[in-house]
Length: 166
Image: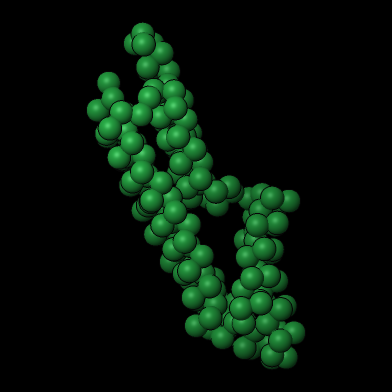
């Protein structure tokens, strides 16, 4: 491929990688998924050699790990605070719907709001409902840093792939 095409593919992929990283910093959209899709697009366009396959598999595992850790830490925080599984599930669904309907803050408002109301309905105690909601938010806050670190590692591994692919 001509140099200008390789440079363009690199620049476009880097742009989407950085957009995904911004999505991890400001949770507007699924940043890890955007980064994974950028790496997939890069591999499909530039080709998957042995190193590319290995690094893309690593990027895929990091993406899955980040998504699973996010959900486990949020749910674990909520459970630690006494939230019921139904409340956690409703809160996660509300978070997704809120993000889609009112980005970037819809999910950040909808998820804890639904958990608070759901827990109040379940236990009939505002204090216990608040503790469960606060614990879930703490779990989400901790998972934020883990997802961000994973996003940085995804970016680094893609850069290694891109520079080895030159």
